[in-house]
Image (cartoon, one colour):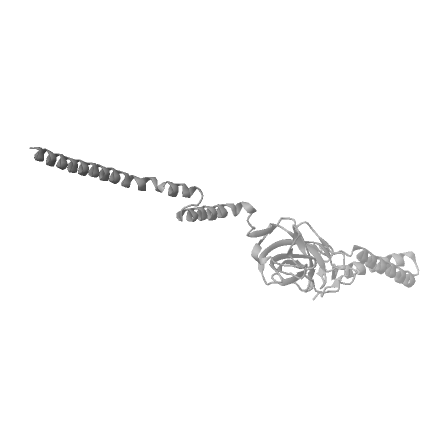
Length: 295
């Protein structure tokens, strides 16, 4: 009996030991899964100092978009067109002479700019640029009254780099060497020779009076002679025209813009004022009548 009790006690002790070992293993297994959960803590704190690989891409994208957005605010965009306002003056010199004696509607006229036109410190139209146009009206002077008249239309501006723009302007302040004038519409009007006409009639009248007085040896003869001389002087005036309106080669004038003149800004890249051709100005002229063939 005692033997059985001892054996039972021994088995009990073995079972208790196995139970205690099993409990220890269970506790170890419960602790083992929990350790990895505590380990990631340092990894989670890492992003605060070192961003994950995907973060730089997002920052880069944000920076690039910010740069793109900031670019337009850096300054105003460059203009695509430049414009000269109405009333701008372009000083010109004439290359081909024009006269009411020979000019016809449609005849070309050629000018060159004498001085650069600038805007905001930038050369827009350099000296030496060309302006072309045509005669739109040519009227010869009359016998007793009526002056010669020339009307021109300026059409095209050609810059030194061969860039062409439509040009609309009327001439003013023409310096022709004579007494031509320019009205508000740009019409060039010839001079008159009223003093010359009066002088012609007075000269022929005096000559006729002298001849009549010598021939008749009386005042009546002088009077008849004076009448004949006056008639001859008037006939001389009637058989001639007034002075022609002329714009000789070298005539200078201003072209005044009738409407704004626009340019492609990419074509206006001049770094100097340009240089115009050297043309001698027209010589001074006195008005003279032009004889008319009565036949």
